[in-house]
Length: 296
Image (cartoon, rainbow, N blue to C red; front, side, top):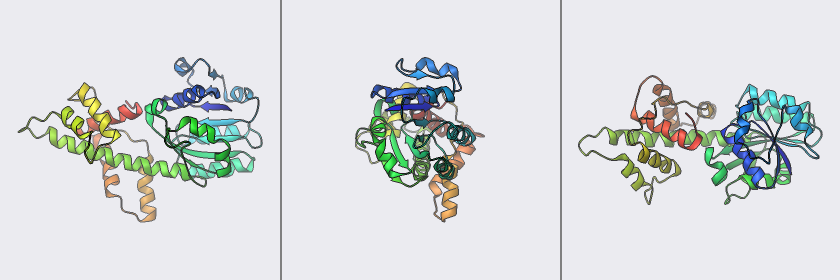
């Protein structure tokens, strides 16, 4: 299968490399010409989206890994003017699910298929495989399932088809909301331990202990345990924590559905608060975000 990847950031570059490693013919494009230096030599780097489209010999499958919002939507609009009948666009970024539903309809009018794919795994996806939740036409998912098999965790064997248009990004949105809450709980607990002078706790030892056999063992705990071994005081991090936007969408959805989510809501409020006040909990969050996503 020939596949194109548009957007060669931290995850997009890894998706391109992972597909190339699995014997896909991969064409790539990114507005930043400097990103190509880390791309596998078998991958073809193109000068423009139009140039990228011209490389295909057969059916065109385009994977987008771009910032959500106007960048993604404008690129899909451009592709709609370049692709032909039965070509496929896959949006693997963190797009808002309502945008994905609208893009599905726009593509459908041009006989182009649109798949929305929630993509989790951060910068570890190349090594461990990505966690994928896929929405759109099921027959199109089945048609290109080998692509999802190549990218996904070996246990999922093709990610998870979750339903109609928008559902893949909807599930990823809720996943990220949960992620915020879990990270905040870990950060707050470790902040308490740090601020208890009586026992002189070594957080690097405690988190390492919790990694094996405890009820709260998790990949997030693995990552922060590793960071604390390197830098117990996390001096290389500041306490200001950004958010990708998906947590905010989760809150808005909870309001629309009248579903209470106090833990997730609180975790996002704390991220806003972190940009004004310095705290060790904020450094913990920053360290975890860097460990799984490469976020500065």
